[in-house]
Length: 427
Image (tube, rainbow, N blue to C red):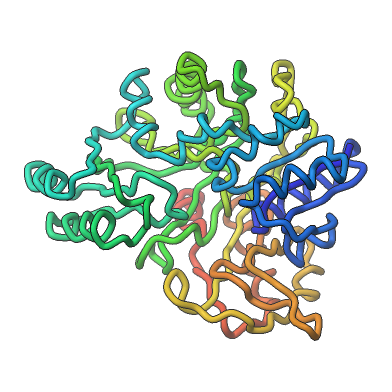
């Protein structure tokens, strides 16, 4: 079949890398793609949020299956438009994408269908939000209601910090329209994990687990980012916990969305807090995670394309996924200054050396080519370097071994990705 992947980041590079290996894939396109994706797919200059342009491209190229990578086109209704053109598409409808596009929608669904999550209130008036925070005390969590590229969350340790976050979001315009309304949540303690499950509107199937690292610096210090690295599987999601999450969170969500008249098709990406009393939902994303995908897909033994196509066609029942018995770990290389101001255009060298490392791979995220043909930095998170091995400790070594072949003085990375799992393995 002819396949189109929508997006241009590390997640889309990993998806194209996996699809290119599938016997089902006759021809692979990516819009707009990046220089790393060019090794696997024909990249076409249509932006990921250009819904009409992508529909036209799908028809023009006679695409048989569309895989939508990022959240923004899903929130804009791209999956609806592709399906209206008669082409199977992996990704939820605009209505179902509210699970990610509106924190308040997600929390209200959890309340209605008894899905365990943090206590919360929604606010469109900053003064009422501040009064609530002063009554509740700190620590407390402030979240922009809409899409904020992973940066709309403040875990406030003091009331003053929470009030500043409310002002920043609701009156300072830090997140644009996404921050005009907020959700204020109870602070939860435990260990975070990312949990992925496929859903075809009726059936849900566990996919994999991972653990992300949001803070920009070693030791989980500094501001939150889109993700500085991840590993898979997450040791905290053992078989018993997996079954609990499916029973208590994923299946009730799938059933609830169906009852609300917006059945969910695609992948549930549940951000979890594993507390002393069990799993609780932090938030939902409605697409594959970045950089979690770059850590999960090298572990997958089954054909990814056939599983996602079956999901899009409503035929997930009977699908089984098989995984390699090893761990994988992805380290993100970012441009100096990220997640604040950073420069673009610096040349990245050593990628050919990194490509020769066995059991390691470099996924491109924010890269471009200059006129001389050099790979350059074109974003905040620029590369995702993944290694795999029997244990997370060994996978960590492999990832950094691959990373250290790259010569890019204008970039940086965390050197402690996987530290929780490595500490657990030492015990």
